[in-house]
Image (cartoon, rainbow, N blue to C red; front, side):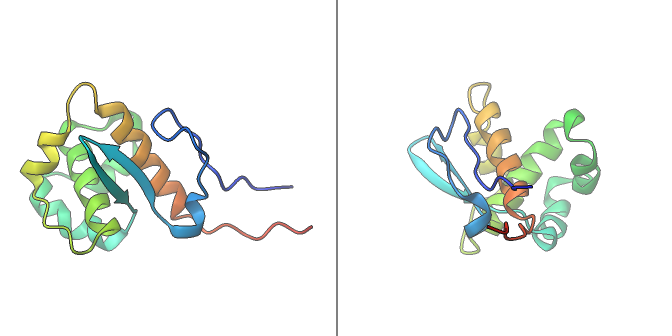
Length: 121
């Protein structure tokens, strides 16, 4: 059984091997962000987010605005450890027209973090 390691989305029409580099690329407002999923970064961001981010991951269909913003910031920081983005700045990037691409990129970063077993030829 073959395992897919590519993700093709509306925001990233070119299939990318997200599992290879453990990040997902998001282009937003003229900037490019590499998002990554890292549990320790989620823990570090949870206080700023003022909500339970792990609960959000366990029920992604019902994410609150606080959880979505917190997970987005954690993913930005995990993808770029030198990032100085604040929780306020992450929230300013989130608008009605950007929620879907941000959510897709977050999902892609979570998928990228899952180890992929090599497929036997």
